[in-house]
Image (cartoon, rainbow, N blue to C red; front, side):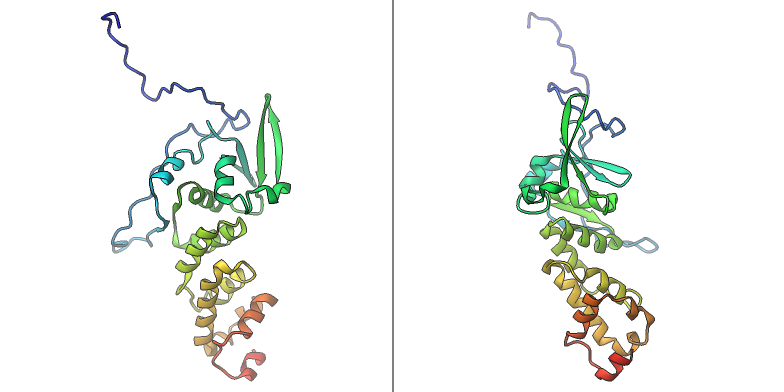
Length: 248
């Protein structure tokens, strides 16, 4: 205007005014998280197991993913032990209004006021912050990349937080992962949760049944709690005489 030369816009400047959570001064500056890598042909020789992609990222998920862990626009603190994550109440309600994040679970929420700003606080001290971060990423984007060793804890946390889509996908990925070393321990962890984990539970019980003669002499069977033991004994996969089962 007026023939003058327009000054270039500073990189990273924003025309909007954001309300920063002053109670989280140590949180990193907002940045758009990198997208998970596209699934490839698998790890090459000498490399570890590849991450597993759960879900599918669409345009809506990509837009919401830009808000993931953004302290500038967040209005919720998720406390996991020594770590604090940020989130958006509207996103949590939209994804799980009738579940864990909804009004029915209002007793888990409390208010915190700092410097005149009131925010919602959700305490999840019983869960690992790394695993909660994975669940929240799926809540925002509809897709998350997890390491193979994270499948079981992510499945349990997603089931606990009533994010059924993620827990079911984890359960399906756990099918066929039972070994002589982890069969009893993982079955014990999986048992007692919702029906979304049933594919994984059935897979572990089937493996134990098919390898009963090797596993029933293992002391790991003693770690099974009552629910897991009953689930195992009531299954039709134990192909061995009852005397051997009860002797073990």
